[in-house]
Structures are given as structure tokens and as C-alpha cells.
Image 1 (tube, rainbow, N blue to C red):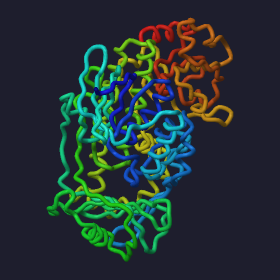
Image 2: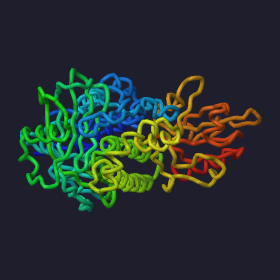
Image 3: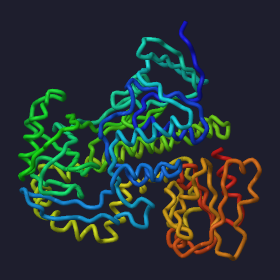
Image 4: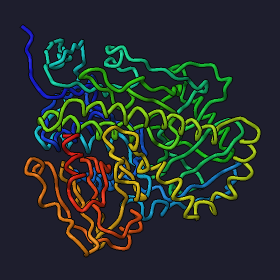
Length: 516
């Protein structure tokens, strides 16, 4: 007779999204079962860009520095036109003053997955590899999933919730009957992890600017190792899986227009790029995250980081509901917040892709004959940095539109409810270093002229909230646009729930009563 197991959450899929979600559930003390049909974590480089917001998330569980040690910081890009270097951009300090991690980290997905998988194992939890979802059903009280391992044995898992982190072809999404509409780029993309003998050191991103195709080389850890991403011409007619590596190398050399010798190929793949997102991120007690919910061009290294943020957004809400601290309606905000983000993300990545690969004559001229010569100067301007970095790093994502962002008292502040807490330092230490506990955080900023303490919060909230007393340093006043005492209530994911200069705790407690 098939066995059965009870848990709080079933996670289908153990790629970066599923593994990172499992790490968050461990942080909140939530029981879960995670399965994947693969044998183990990926051995390949795959997604290599890790953004500042992901590192901020990992900082809370002690993994940011460990991941940084496995990669290198992208600090420079060279632009090549017609086989010659035409410009160089230094973005080593592009995010200075905006995050503890003011850069893009380049690290192989295989190493990344191994690190967070080890974190899961170190906490006594394990992925059930070579196990797949057979079927699932749900009702008002929970979800029942039938899973099967590689020996053909089936098991029923009964849980309160299920999260599909099972990729672009997501069986969970299909089982829920959700739409996944969008478009497909006609170009065939290729990606290769190789070793190259050529004139350049692997110390900078190499961007080849052309009329029609896309080609970029990303330095990797290891002697002469590079990740190459490019496109075939529109007339290239082969399907995915039919392309030989020799055809990829031939296209690389044709587009690069300079001498290079690819001496070793560690891994390569071809694919068509789809731009799609679900019509909603949840149905009943089932949720989607990562590629199961949104896919898009690789422009800007957004995909994997967005999936990790999906899970980060969902985890604290699941925890509050499972602990009985909040009504299940709190989970509606997951779809509210992440669906709008997915829609904006697809628009942004499409625009960026068109800038670097569109055959439109005006864009082609600007890309090849103007941008290489002005980019270096442009990226030295603070206004450009403040525009570009928040969008690339994902620290600029906000949930101002969300039903759990309270704008009643934020009119007098430069920062609004729904924004990520801005980065600033206290006595040389990042504010985020104090916000690692899986709780709400009440920051009471004092001008020294009155009482701002949060210590007299109602007893019903004290176990759910950390309280910090902070003087209004000049940088704090600059960031928030206020030099008078005020309070900021942060959600567990460090987004602002509400902000108020009311002398009493009434606005804070009213919010907590509504949300919890």
C-alpha cells in the first residue's frame, strides 16, 4: 500500500528557486518536502549573474560572503566593434551607497546551487532527488500530491500548501490550468562554457556590438574560462537540439571578427527565447515561482534572481499563516506583488534586448557608432548610476500598489510604503546587518526631542517584532526626507509596511491588527 506523509509545504523543483525557498522555510521553522526529478544539483554553469538583492537575501542566512568567495565581481566591460575595442566602461562602484553589494556577482549556477543545497542538508533537511510529481489535488483544507521515485514507488504527501518551482514547462502550472501567454523570439540563442586562447585577459565582460546578432563573453573563474552567449542570424533554420557545437564556434568566430582559439568546451546549449508570464501566481493553496511563472530574454541577468525573490516574498507569508499569526488572505498579496513585477520585468528585458540586438537602423547606428564612445563617461555620472543600478540589481523593485502597503502616513516622506528599506550605515555597519531575524522590524528614528520607543507595543505583537532605536543621523534624514522623529515598520522581507511620524504607536498597531 502506498505510504503517506504530512508536511506544511510541498516544493516541486530543486533548482535555484526551489532550493532558495527551502532555505527560507528553514529560517522560519516551517516543515516541508522538496522533490526534483534530477539526480542532484546541476553540474553546469547556466545562470551566472547574482544581483545585489539576492545577496541581501542571502546575508540574512549567512550565505552572502560564501557565495561571493565562489565568484568574481563584474567591474568592467569592453565594447568591441569590427574586431576592435571601441570603448570601456568601469562600473566597479556603480551601486556605491545603495547596497552592501554594489555590483553584479558572476558565479556558476552549479556552485551556487551546491552552496544552498549544503545549507539545507546542514539543517537536517534533504531534497528527494529522482522523484517527480504524478498528480495533485487541493481543497479548502490542504493539498494532496502523489509523487514517484526512480524505483517506481509512489507516495502521497499531504500538506497545507504546494509551490511549483518546476521550470518553464511546469506540470504544476499545467495542473492548475493557468495561462502562460506571451511571445517567442525567432532567433536561436546559444550559450557555451569554454576556454579561449586569445589576446584578452578574463578580467572584463566583452560585448560585441553588431548590426543584427548578439554576442557577449563573460569571464569565469579558472584559467582562460569564458561564458559565451550569442544568437544565430534570423535565417538560421535548425531546431533546438539539432545544432552542432561546430556551428556555434563558427558563428562565434564570424561575429567576433578577431583571432581566437577555443581550446576546450565544458558545456553548451541552444534554445529559443520565450517571453511569457502566468495570468496569476496562485490558485487556491498552490503557488508558482521562478520559471514556472515567468520566462524572458537573458538580458540583464534577471531570471534566476527574480525566482529567488518570488520565494523570498512568499516564504514569510506562508510562515505567518502556518503559525496562525495571520489570516490566509495575506497570501493574496503574493500574486498582487509578484505578478506586477513579472509584467514589468518582461517589458524591461524586452527593451534591453532590443537595444543590444535590434536590427532597426537607428538603434543599430547608435549601438555601433555612438554608445561605445559615450558609455564610459555616462556611467561615471551619479544620476546614471542611480537610474541603472536599482533596476539591474533589483533593489528598486517596490510593492507600493500592494494591499498590505499602508500609505496613510507616508505623504511627508521621500520613501513610501512598499519600498525596500533604503541602504544606509549605522556606525559603519549596514542597517541590514541588524535585520536578520525572521520577524517584522520596528525602526524608531529619534531626533532626540521626544519619545519614540517601541517597547510598549501590545503583548500580542512582541514575539513577532524586533524593535530598534536609531538616532536620526544626517544620512537617515537625507534618505527619508525627514529630520523629525518617525517610525518605520518593516515586513520580514525588509520592505516597508508603513511609515509614520505619529507620536503614538497607534498607526503601527493598527497596521499589525489588519495584517496579522
